[in-house]
Amino acid sequence: LEDRDIVALYWRRDEDAIAATAQKYGSYCRIIGYNILRDEQDAEECVNDTYARAWDSMPSNRPDHLAPYLGKLTRWIALDRLKWQNSQKRGGKNESSLSLEDIGELTLQGDSVQNELEYHELCMAINGFLQNLSATERQVFLARYWYMANIREIARQFHFHESKVKSMLMRTRSKLMNYLKEEGLC
Amino acid sequence: VLNPKILLAMNDLDDKYLLETAESMGYLEGMTMKKKRNKTFRLLLIAAALIALLSISAFAMSGWYTKTFLLEDKPELTSMVQQAMDDASRFSGTNANEAEISPVASYENGEYAQSGVYRFSTTSGSIGYYETGEIQFIDCRSSEPENLTGIQKYSDPYENFFANDADMDSYVEKLEEAAPVILDALQQDGWIQGHSEEIARVWVNDIYGKDTIFNGPTATIHVLMVDDTAYELWLNPETLECEGFMFWKAEDMPNTRNGLFAALKEGKQAQWQYDVSHNPHAVG
Image (tube, rainbow over all chains, first blue to last red; front, top):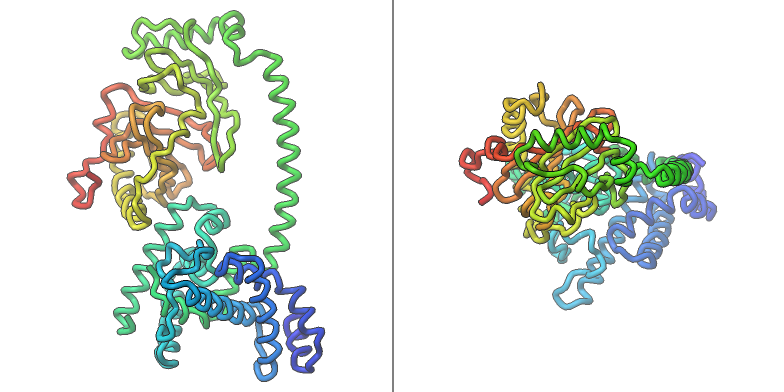
């Protein structure tokens, strides 16, 4: 089914929408959930929550592309779950989320995004920043920090050595920080 | 470190960037293609394995790599190796007939394979012979030549060289500065000809510790030029002194080591050293 057909099923409140979503995008959502949580069962629960969230949000939303729409839902849900897991461990980060080790302590405290305005400004600025990157730099950066893929996987997909990926990420992070400072957002 | 606030704010990035990244990572329709490709790849792998098995069987039966074959049936090869040894002061007085002969393995992604290079190891060092009949590298220095094999070179990783990722990143940056200087020096010394001026990327392939073909820790650095030629530099990881290098043919890189394979004449490595004093952030 095309995305618009699946969205139409949601709008008609037809439960086949869930089955169609699972068939077409289940793996995609599972990858995102697993990359963040590093646990198959947690990832599966994330995916199920994504379907529920999609069911609740359509209507009123009518996304053109279901993949990023569902991906964003999954990512939010997984990060939220990670935050909850971290809060269950006194002062510790999720030990299973090895892929997050080299992006530092992901504490995800409640005050991380204090207001919507700041959030949207940051998001717009990052979009602007990404536009000026080369396609490869952008994809490697997002593979790591949006899809939370581990370095080895990224290196394999892009046919780079791991040190090259790390080096590229470091430079892009540095560029982003400078950019956000210039924009007065960091 | 990426600020968690930024990580969260990234959630609503433009769909087009998320889609292109998902495609590049094989997360979407690419996943189907990836599975197909993997299936095809597996079939190719099986076919390659069968061919390799047959080749190895024939290879073993022919006794190609045995000393007996080389000495008795390939006197011209023995003579050629002896001549190369005689030309290198390091091998002074070494008898090629006393060399241990071993195939040099190529190594990629944890797999070893025949590289087409054979190493004649002696107590004075080792000498390489390429299947095409050329002497391709000489005078690999080692304190323990009797233990040399192509595989052993990759053992004993030099652990903890990088305390963290930032160290690795800054090291790669330093190598990006050092590589052209080393390549220029190699060119001036006649080892390589007309290398591309522009480096596409540099990465650390491996850093391993003692008991390698060199006397101490060695970093293998891969330098890919914009014209798709590539070099592997063997450096002292601390001083960036170049101990050897390898050139990959464009059509072979980056997975084979069948290109021109060269090591150094004794005493030359200092000339190929990147002068760390030029770099305020130099290692050591």
